Amino acid sequence: MLNCTQCGGELHPDEGQLFIACPYCGSTIYLDKSRVVFHWYLAPTLNDQQASAALARWMAGNDTVKDLDKKSRILGQTFQYFPVWYFKVKDGNNERIYLEPAAATSITELRNLNLPAGDLRKYEDSLLSTSLEPTVPLAAAQQWLLQKQVNLQQIAECALVHIPIYTFKYGFKNRLYTAAVEAATGRTLANIFPAKAEAPYLAVGCATALVFLCLAVLLAGFSVAGSGASTGIGLAICIGGGMVAAPVLFGFASWVASKV
Ligand SMILES: [Zn+2]
Image (cartoon, rainbow, N blue to C red; front, side):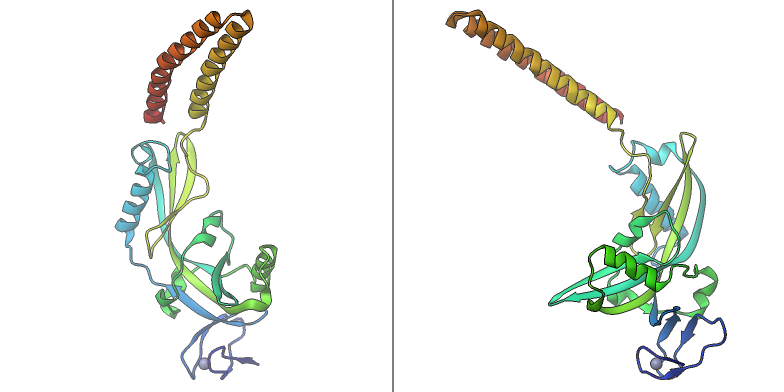
């Protein structure tokens, strides 16, 4: 026998039924193997076009390779409510929300989503056809919390939340990538994407270091060679060399930055 998490009323789910609404208080409930929890969903505010626009803005932004929005090709767009386990953990006066994916996903950034409690609504049966069913048991998600040093005794609230997600597949330079747009806020989530390459920046850094190392060696050479006069000449050469090298290197760095 099962009881409602809200009112304690007796629930009589059918064999295999996972989603249920309490007949007494109307709470929506999910039946996990280990226990009964609240079941919420986050209402989407973006439609298909707005989700594509959010993705395009992210692609045009500074996190990704230059002109990704123009150079990539969108190959597919799907919408689904994705399940996450929601934990409210209270430690004294501190309250923290932890999210863990309740189904397999490559997008682990889901954990970092912000889910304001006020935006959560009672799950509705009409969303079933577009909802992914949880495959990660609550107990497994609790194990992940333990690994994060969370004291399970401090969990004040636990729920299943279905989050509206647009998943995009896109091609860039003969590789396939996946990005997700969370349809309540338009935030883009992607673990692997064509990022700005680091190699050109490293090259500029190394060139700069090398030039100044040469100048330093030169100065040391003059100093060892002897008199105050030659040290003075060495110093003048180094300062002069530095003054010539700095704008050249700066220009090179700017050029690299504009290319990647
Ligand atoms: Zn109830």
